Length: 78
Image (cartoon, rainbow, N blue to C red; front, side, top):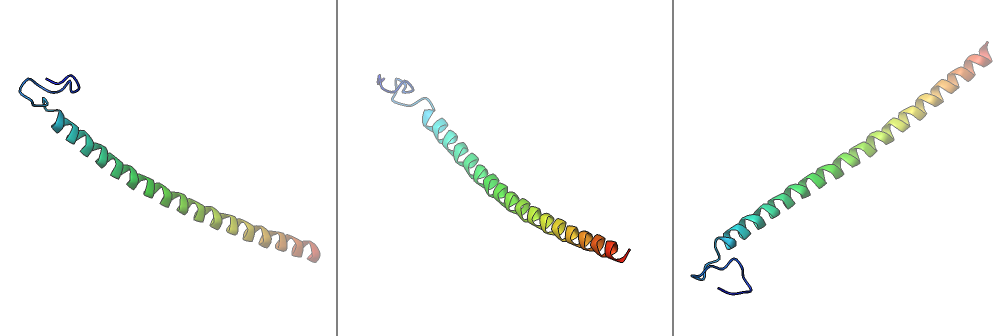
């Protein structure tokens, strides 16, 4: 048994450490892929929110112009 590797057994094996390490790395890689997917979806949502905010501001400005024009016209008529 080597003093540098506490997982090594008396027969030179690693007591399943290599298999466990492989499983952990696979899970980390899988979690990383899922995190990348979530990040892309979040970016898409942020873009969609920005588009909706722009549309809402445009509509609000248009309605304000129409209402102020209508009120101004009504005041001139009456």
